[in-house]
Length: 97
View 1 (cartoon, rainbow, N blue to C red):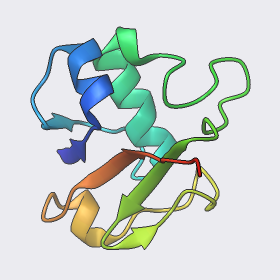
View 2: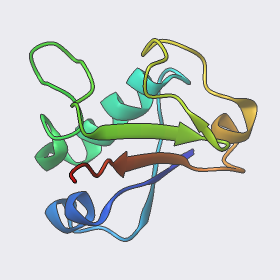
View 3: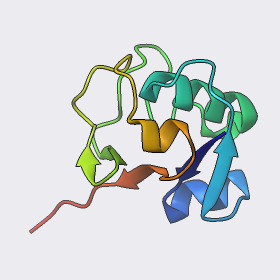
């Protein structure tokens, strides 16, 4: 199981706690998001564009203190994430002046 930490707005939308667990078919960001959207369909089109599959501009992914937001969606996640020792973090970025 892969642990996923969601930002507050997505937690409220999905009706879940801060952290959820998913079983990803592939140990990649895309695999985790596929599993997350399958388990919580209301999250479809919130983290990534449903048509293109690309990450939304103000959403970031982190794992083991590393920003994975610009890595390829099929890049293999660190073993700590795959083994459930560390969470895959979805974070809403903040912008403004």
